[in-house]
Length: 397
Image 1: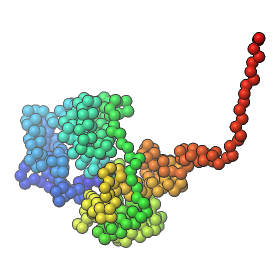
Image 2 (image 1 turned 90 degrees about the vertical axis):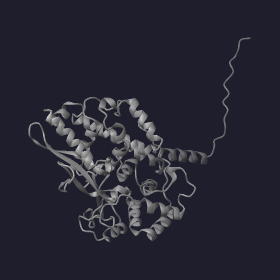
Image 3 (image 1 turned 90 degrees about the horizontal axis):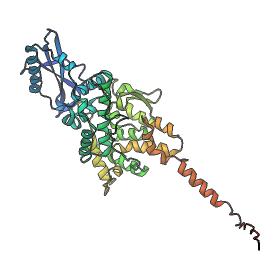
Image 4 (image 1 turned 135 degrees about the vertical axis):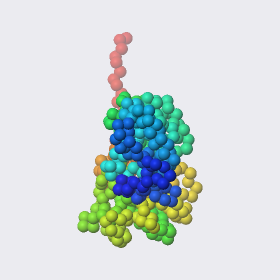
């Protein structure tokens, strides 16, 4: 969760009916993020709270005041803003806010999705209705995003949009079909990740030593990712209560908010318990106890010091923190101890297509079996060549 739900609202000193809450986890410009609310009585005299949005998405006290003024003007004209909103076609901003609110109530970590929406969807489609999200409009936006972002990142943007639209359709906020759904003609960005780099044991040892010099905590986080395949955002959220020493189990809020468990070996277990955190405390955290957002500056400098990315321009071949996850899954695949379905479960992939990126590393794959069959046939003695000459037909003289 983003930490907004348990905080009391603080009344604005500048504007009547404007309030805000501070986040316990999300930070903006070096301070806790604020989410703004307004209050008013509708045309029926019923008291209303309305969420306007967080400061990290450009919302200010003045903007919240402007929205409250708009609501009050409608009320003075005898209209009810809430009724008007339901009777008109919802816009994407409204659908996303409801989607995010429900996610927070379910305990999901929505901060990443809020950031992605605010940067890459809100400016283009925030005021769009479902009818405005045409194939042409979506394709043009995809092309614009592809010029400045990696295909995987662009795919993540449109995957979020697809989820939000599906949510709006389920909640009857919109009526129609999803323009990014399976029956549409829109094509999601193609991502070719099968060539992504994973570390050798020598590279791993060198990088861990360098990280130990620069930041022991980042070193421990990278070791955890190497042994378990955890994502950085999953590691950021681990608390003291999530470590079960008796069963060598680590519980976590995985991608999408699902509660999952993974096995941790004794070395990693000792590393986690060595931080001596209380049950509600984050294991890996900032100096002020707040949730980490990124550790990429330290990690990038360590990679450069070891020379892992020297002369490499292909992003798929560069080492970054997520390389630890690729390394873990690649080594599981190479061990020969996992079938493809078992590898999918170990990697906690939602779709088998994602696991297929590692299929070529599994010993005993179709290709390797064909190669082994061909080599075995080459070792067998070649039988003598026999020419079978058909008998000539007797022609009439």
